[in-house]
Length: 286
Ligand code: BT5
Image (cartoon, rainbow, N blue to C red; front, side, top):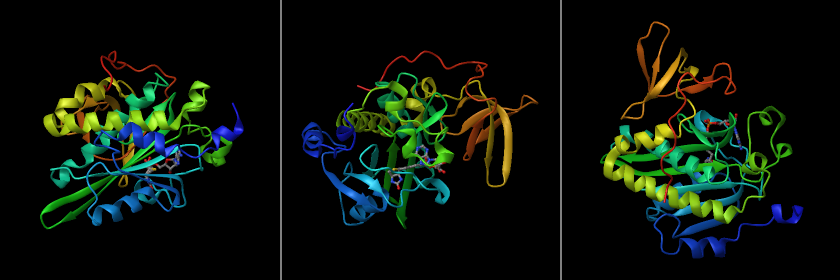
């Protein structure tokens, strides 16, 4: 692998050609450096930009995760993408978009690393390490949801040294997982296609319509997990996901628990065998 190649700018002309007839990514705003692609996309959406408009940057100086956490964004290695959505949804349904994006990201990543799986609610993992994170932010007014900015960060060619020491055994890139240099244009094109397809299916059939697919890509089914957040802590075995996107657990007393939000830790790690591993994956995004 040539070190120069791994520092090359994204071939935006090639990506724009591939997306010319599509909905997601037909318009792409590309930057060397921004504070956060979600912030840039929000401004474009406020100015009237169409659904499917994408923002991509080579690096972010203030890339963000949930709850004010930072998204580490080394330049020229990875994908930092935000897409403007204008979904006809109630505010309470917007969290399901994160799940839809998790499915699409796991499917796209799975074309390079077959072990890629969703970790509810907003991560994609390979071998128990975080490959991608999703942050959906909505803008509402008196009439309801004006738009949603769907932000996705995927580690493509980052090396361990590109991450701060505390992340080196928690984060992974597709390159580290596969040993191959990843073509970032090819990945972005597949991700945008999968997102477009799964988002359309979601708007037509609701989350219930993609739930079986989502479950077949879940890394958590049958695993004992701890859920933390909002000062609460719960332990149980994951039995699946409900039609509204809540995670379903069974606790030690065999009671069913539904989890709306939180951070998930797999107890015993992913090396430990799941009590009921996910079913075989039947189909991938077109
Ligand atoms: C997320 O939050 O995982 C959502 C990340 C969304 C990032 C995208 S990039 C494009 C768009 N523009 C933005 O500004 N954001 C979106 P959360 O579940 O809160 O996880 C954040 C945690 O993930 C951090 O506290 C770290 O522990 C870890 N982390 C940070 N950077 C990482 C990276 N590059 N790879 C893997 N893990 C990372």
